[in-house]
Length: 425
Image (cartoon, rainbow, N blue to C red; front, side, top):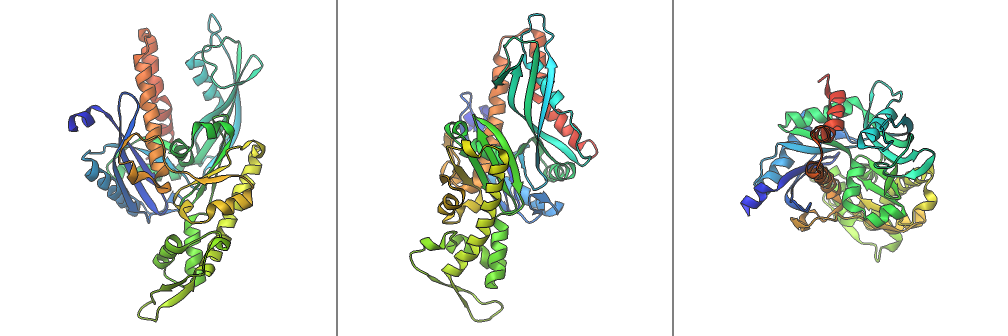
């Protein structure tokens, strides 16, 4: 078995969140199957709303999480795929156009790369950098609705893309933390995009679905339709705000508020079968305090309603509110609060469910069957797709020049991204 694992390719997902850091080590075999080999989790105290505010604390949390995963898997980690989030993330629509100059007017992958590069030529504030360029559709000689133009014939090709940007400083600090912890960054992926790999079915993305990832510091919203991510937004209110409300409203310690939320919290108090009285230990020798579950639930509901109202605003702003047949899928640690599904159905007027990681074929499957691991598993699955793409391109019969170009394309976007973000480090 040990020999088999060494033959497989190893990928690592690192989810650096506001309240936790999660590391997942997996192997990808020749058939593209993902086996979870190690899972590690550490408390995160060095981030605020998804952005690093304390380098040392974040470095320690990264080391602790990865070392736990290494201990379970027996594999030494060298490089990781990192998720990025935070309320600094922005989504912009852009267009580009090129002419096809090939002798037979056939569109190639190089032409698509050239077009997407043209789409990147937009004016951005000096503190912002492009993270992803996500094609929405291609238009060839006036024919629109094309998702993959490679191999088609045409003279003029246009693209409508969604550009995801983030703060240069936020990305640099994230990179510094990973490097100081002793690891290399293989790729940086927008966290809601990563989560979608783990929890959304292809049918849901085709029919139209809203993914809401409620973390500790931010709530990430991603809207899919026709298998394409159409809109993204990061909301700076999430699970930690719920904990803060409980702490202030019930006059308890933060650790007590966290336990109350997870052990007795409910976002839809009308569904409580009975109003249980919860005993909370007193502070510094004071007498214990009794808390009604209904009061706890009303505090939680108020903040969850605010989050859902902001989600509704983003759904309407996206322009896709009428085409979301699959409803909304919740994931992330904040989705573990009881009653969030009926509350969302009432407020958003659409079907809702909790999304768990899917598509894992072996290993520690049960250990990651929780919404808190969705982003980490998604990062692994994103890396898996990159490995499969690399394998297919290497196996494709091409002439020497095409093979060289193919290998260059595999790392081109990552090299550009890393060079632009981190050249001043």
